[in-house]
Length: 422
Image (tube, rainbow, N blue to C red):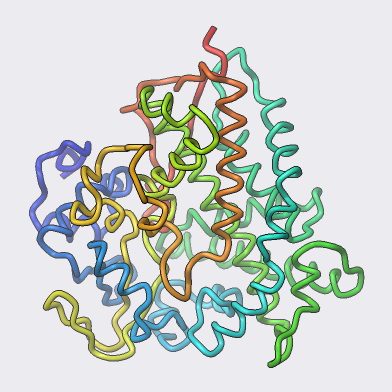
């Protein structure tokens, strides 16, 4: 099975092989999921899976089905409504951190989104531009140019972590520990040992955020977390539980996805010199290239879980009431019925920003999309501006992708580059 999808040019998989790979989350599938999603799109676009957590799950891989499902009110994001399935997948520790807009339905989602939106404004994001540039420059100043450097820990991760912490108001000396706990949550699979590590990390994060929110009540500052402490709408303010959970989702989602996305972008541009040349022509070309990379290799491989509030039929496949549903963002973004030559990176692809699903669609469209775009533009523009001759330290085909057995993020395990090959 390993050789069946070792590369994107592999011989096509049978529907049974593809479903088995997606169900088991095998290392081969995690290293390169694209052939599996291609086979499912063609033969089983709404595919019943038998995942390790043992909860009945359906995976949607076509663009039009996925886009519709992301906005379908019959598919609930309120995992408290599927609490038995939730316990089996995540255990008890995650519940306290999931009382936020990502895991809720209207009217609660509407209220939480309105409160967060009133504080996490485009003006606040734009006000970070100078600071994002400063952090980018500081990190690149520290990167050695005389030999290979792994950009993930040295640049890709610390940049969005520092930015989201600046935005929230997390003190600088507390950021490293928060990042370590978040990394444990992002990279934990299934099994008793993994579950224990997840419980410890999430417990530590929750205790830290409870204490941080209490500090912001006592000593407010100009950060987003202080603004959330006092923000209200006509229905009142966030509860203490909602506040801590909202801080958690902004911290976690606000740096992990962007970190992996920066790494994906650097890797693919360095692997394709002509695409890199086109992307670096000017700021507009780079902005367009970033949108194409969001489509081509999004760091958010699958949507978070939804569950069917009633029996639903999609493409003649019955999704029974209570079953879990995931949308493959990666699969949808490479659907040939939506995108011409979808397995080719084309930084001049027209109208891609309005079409790709990297930030979701519908009521749960990512509130942090403007910040992610700002960070990507500054990070890539500055990195390639300083080091135009930067090169991968190894052959592109030798790149190592994350193989943790849970397809939440799609990203590299390492990104060794030589900033100044001369």
